[in-house]
Image 1 (cartoon, helix red, strand yellow):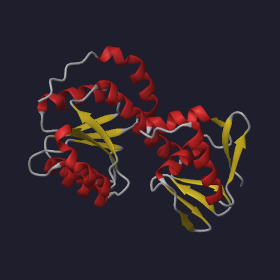
Image 2 (cartoon, one colour):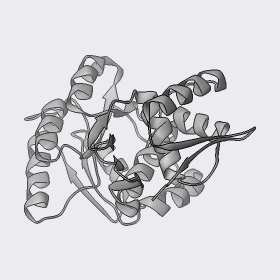
Image 3 (cartoon, one colour):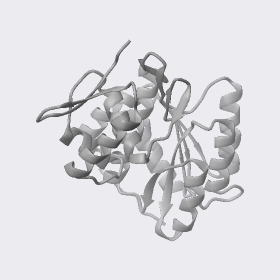
Image 4 (tube, helix red, strand yellow):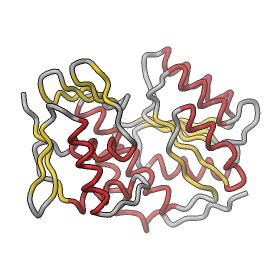
Amino acid sequence: MQDFDFDISKYRLRIIELKKYTQNMNVLIVEDYLDLLRSLSKIFTTLFSSVEVAVNGAEALEIYKQKKANKESFDIVFSDIVMPMLNGVELAKEIKAIDKNQSIIIFSAHQEVSFLLDFVNIGVERFVSKPISLDELFEELIITCKRVYEEKSLGNIVVIAKDIVYIRKERELYIDNKKVSLTHQERLIFECLITNMNIAVSKSQILEYLWQEKVDLDEVNLRKIFYRLRKKLDGVELKNIYSLGYKLVKNI
């Protein structure tokens, strides 16, 4: 079991940065190791508007269903994998059946890697490894909470041009009501440009965004992907800004 001692004051600047996104968010923590659950709850209480906890998957599912019955929701669910009554994979599957867009972060120990493909197939792609490092935890929180915040504040449907829309939650682009197939890297680049609509985004900013999403790319491959992306997106105004980077232009 993890001995989760920490000095939260060391992370003051990260907490300040995170609270720009998290102060109105509600989260659920599912963890059967009580010392870790208490530690996580203590950290998350400084960040989120509401923190609810469960000690097994079955209890978590009941809390989740009750939240939905009250026409409320959790912005993020954090869950362990190996738990009594209902494990993390089973819980995630039940939650995704209720809300396929629910953001879920899984706490995964090294010996639990066999479960990861199951999670990806369900639609869960965010993980924090155990033993939990606060540096890794805060890094993951910044990525996920910023995305959830943008979906809520900027709207789910982004209209780029006539008959061209991007749906944030589903992470899908439609041109003339037809879904455009994007690779993972293409989608991440496009999302970075959407977040900065009508603003030139430097190559280094895009590469940093990709790195935060655990995609390691260099400028040469970025140019190749951007070239393919422009060919795919007929009607979308993607500009190459000489010596700087790229810009997505809203044309409506």
